[in-house]
Length: 76
Image 1 (cartoon, rainbow, N blue to C red):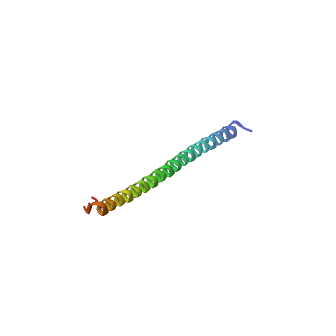
Image 2: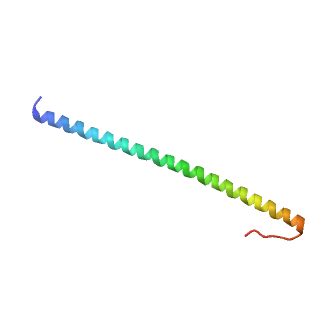
Image 3: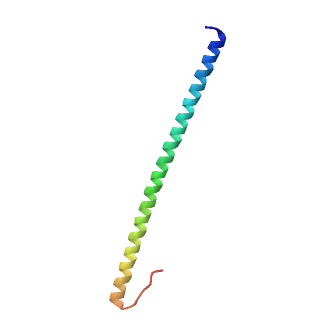
């Protein structure tokens, strides 16, 4: 094999190796972003449930106080 063909082959193999490394880095970044997104969704969901439960407890407490005292409270 002549030197020119070896150089072209080596260059092509090097380019292929760099492309594979870039693809692996992009895939790792994508996986990291997906995990962070899932964690964000889980945290948001838990926060929403906490707010809902908190509002329900507040509503129950204020309703119960109204029944006991006759004083009406308003949620803001």
